[in-house]
Image (cartoon, rainbow, N blue to C red; front, side):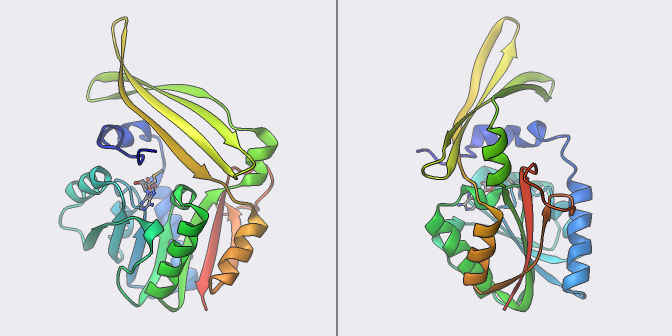
Amino acid sequence: MKAPFSSEYSRLYDAVYRAKRYREEALRIRRIFEHYVPGARRVLELGCGTGGHARYLSRYYEMVCVDRSATMIRIAREGLRGRPITWRRADLGRGGSFGLGFDACLSLFHVMNYLTPAGFGRALGTVRHDLRHGGLFVFDSWNGDALLREGPASGERAFQSGGRHFVRRVTPRLNTHEGYCDVAIRIEEIQGRRRIIRSDEVHRMRYHFPNELRRLVARGGFTVRAVTNDVGGRLTGRDWSMQFVVTRN
Ligand SMILES: C[S@@+](CC[C@H](N)C(=O)[O-])C[C@H]1O[C@@H](n2cnc3c(N)ncnc32)[C@H](O)[C@@H]1O
């Protein structure tokens, strides 16, 4: 299967997610950092994408930002030139290290769901290795409880980029036996009556259950501090996204 976030999709990513509230999200993450690791200076971001969160967090922290997609990293680097950020292109599923002694690490907007179970373990190993003792890791994941309760939905959404008109169509296919959902994402440009396919990708998203993740992170050498929905509220079986706040033992 071709890796998602090809150059075509990545170039349209910011237009697709124009309404996403990166500033609010980043400021909330900063408050979490201030609470658990006050005085933090060095931050690692895994799956930084086009730098939506780094844009705000790099005002306060020295960052190392990692992503597998060459185009996502290039867009982020160009948009955030001059910031105290080191960019690294790498596949988190392979493990490895991005430096030592980080105070905090973040991985937001379901980056961890792109990893196989073995890759997830290796990524967790990287975080464990690269964080200082007591360092903080904040990440989110698709909540299997909500996904299985409501079922993934197909949908279509129009958006514009550079004066051009597009439609993004999402078609999910759930595999409960293997614990993933293949999300086919097709982007078509609308030119009068014509629709021209600009990007066609399948994103394999492995969902998790709250208790499963609690066990995984505990086994990986972390202590769970909080499990919430993605705005910091109480997690319920209706929340599609869950956020984990854990510290390195
Ligand atoms: C939904 S985007 C989120 C990007 C960014 N965190 C945001 O909030 O906009 C998922 C990102 O994870 C990256 N990604 C997926 N699998 C990865 C892997 N195995 N290693 C590194 N990055 C990966 C993708 O390239 C993409 O930039």
